[in-house]
Length: 232
Image 1: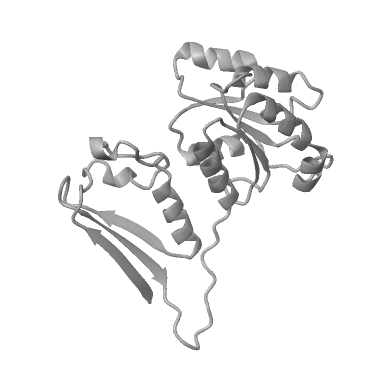
Image 2 (image 1 turned 60 degrees about the horizontal axis):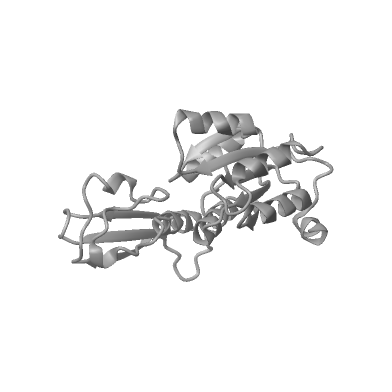
């Protein structure tokens, strides 16, 4: 009842301790010198999500380092003349809402936006503080995922500026940063952030935060994405 496709190699292999976490966001193994420019650690998360959207599964096995690895994808088989089955529902963890991602690393921003979009959210991306403020004013989003270490205006300043605006108390604002000391969390709270996540961030934790802080109830006065772009 399934179509099975596997890819096996005889390459660097995978450490057994890493196998249970390989499909998690931003997970990467150790890099050798000849592979120092590796990816961001999002590719396999996207693979799993795409396969699951088709009602399938993906798994990996490896005897260990230096012994290669194998990935196997299983998808529901459809035979000639057989009506196609709808894949299992993949309901988002929160109601589809508008989200602004402010991150100066374009690959990271675009990848996070893609993952959020795959969960049904409308996502707009900004790559510095000034652009983030402009798009926040135009969109009035339900949630803002905001990098702190931005060029020009820092994420902390962006958060304070948003909170000072008449509508600024409405969005959930989450700090995404590499700084995770207690004083960093304290500064985030003082600036008006609702939560502080240290990179690398598990996307499931982001979805849980959005649900916990209630970024799921539509506002009657909220502009659509097209209206927001026109306003910008």
